[in-house]
Length: 454
Image 1 (cartoon, rainbow, N blue to C red):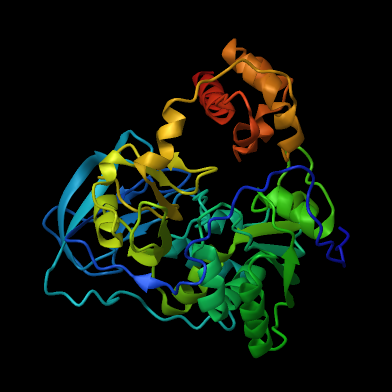
Image 2 (cartoon, rainbow, N blue to C red):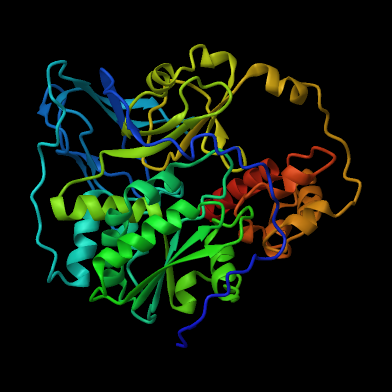
């Protein structure tokens, strides 16, 4: 397979330019206090739910394994706090339905330092050893997809990977957690990149960063220089034009190399694996220490937040506790979005916990959303704005009309609904205010249920 030896650094076709609203881009990462109770959902990732290995009343220490994964597309979970297991059962989930969870009551006098872990010497570790260590850590993609990282870094036998593409774009408005990780944890990121290169067999790695984050590029290049020439290969940090949705792996590969990932294929078909900067930075810290993922950096921001910033939050911390600390009291009467404004989803309850895939919490004030309450949806006027903005080259207008008629099978077979990754560009530009992305999500869910029933 040919290794592309140049970096294109040009924007992909179509897309949009929403206001960036990066309110916290220059604020250092801070640590959030520990909540009195944490709730660890067992379904925080794509794949089979792991089984609990603790019982009610059992004492656990911070970092101790509390759920074990027995299947490949599953990951273990670890205790985010030192305390006692108070409950194992159903609790409200981020997506709405209640999910199997483990509730831990934190010991008030505990120092909450990491007490579980066995340091590893990974200098001579094989790719298989690295993959097993990643699996043991419970790591999933921290960019939002929550796909098990060990599975994503496992290269199929018939494929060969030459390039690890590291996604540092963070094109979603308001979110800055990846930006701050690149600036403040660049050494850990380069270490994580080395592990991922060894696991995949890649001979080079390119960190793609949007050109509105020059300080991140400088920090990573300095960290690369400190490491010198690493045994796994070459590591680069490259700028790409700022445009939404640059963070999609297909768009990033197009911007860096000018090649298109074929419809229905993954980047591995071109000899590439794409991973998020937050994921690899976390691996750079966790793997040498032999620890599991028990906290992550989350952007808490928006006009309704008095103390916006990027916070290190223990997993399982109640959303209500997070917002109270960040200065967003009375958030029930406001719009709370989990993630960013383009691809995030509204929080149905403030009783849900922070999970591994939650990169941000956005709080809008009621007066800023009042205009939406009076905005109506009108028929499609065939303006083609959605077609011009769709980065995948789909016809959102036609898909929307088919969805209105419940022609879901036709959407999937003839109009490539599966290629839509729900970036929201079509809804953003639609002058008729048609909720296209929501229609597509419903259609996809119905098609998945049909496939399962067959």
